[in-house]
Picture 1 (cartoon, rainbow, N blue to C red):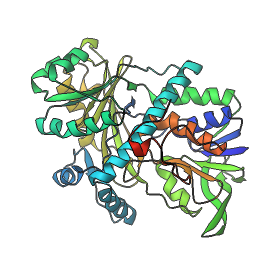
Picture 2: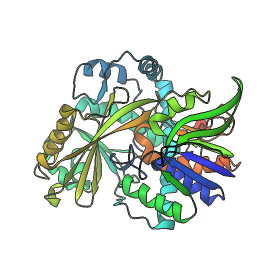
Picture 3: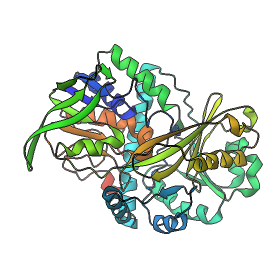
Picture 4: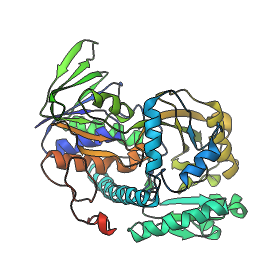
Length: 437
């Protein structure tokens, strides 16, 4: 089957890889000059199955009220005259009740576990080097109130099969000695030793090269103008993609199946094909610091849940990423938010680097109200979705790509997840269990 994949971030590249492995003829369309130039360029680097509590949870509405008007708020709604933003915000609130939050957590845990196993298998097969570490992820808290709030989600995750263990401050320092400086400030932590970290940009660009060597056609510097579909509102079929090609000329490309993996741009592109997606861009920031004193730098990937920051070590670099700003498609760097990231980093790891050496980046994460991505068939025939992964694109990338390749090949993936356009089955998720490996 001829398949066109739209987007060459980690999601699109992994999808192309698995489709080619399944025997399909694959072409990837990417507007940038290389793979992983946007949201997959500078993120926090965590393969974080344990980061499965959705943003939309019972405690979120009060936190959002507290953060209103704060430029350095972990989650900032910059209110605009944008109906899409308001619709997304209202749907976000509808995902906050305990029942919805738990349902979404199950979805994220199941897909995350499957995806981590898929990445590990792919790593063994390809020997791709991406500065990965397999030392787990530690979520730490300096607020006793925030730590208390984390205990119940951690219990639910253990019940669902994710071993997110609650630990005290002494155990935190034993696992990560670089935290000794703030031992007296630690209220506690949770730790998941099966989680990993690594540089998604290095991984994605290496996988793109291997996919190309295997026969995938990667077309860089092409801009998708419109998705073409024919038929009535109740029965549409995807017929092609109109692009501005490498020379800037109009071109129409056609295939047997189409995969939309264009991140935050997926929602406006999908509209032309009659598909409505609840995706809104959530701008995330990152800072990368050179490690000047290795003894002061963490070697375990960390999550600061109060400040919504993650820390990952990439060799002699420390990547700090996080926060979310809902402000349309604006990619400008807010110096207040950038400085807040580095300030918090040097509070926790004094002497690890110097603030003037930081390099900053911002990317638009394709967020759905409940954090659960769209993976599967769309309502338009021959158009498939692999988008809306929010902050978990790296965590879910390989699993989403592998699962979608299975669906396009006519097989149900071996993971209990609510795939779009696929009838749900009574299975592990409804019983609170992860997929069978």
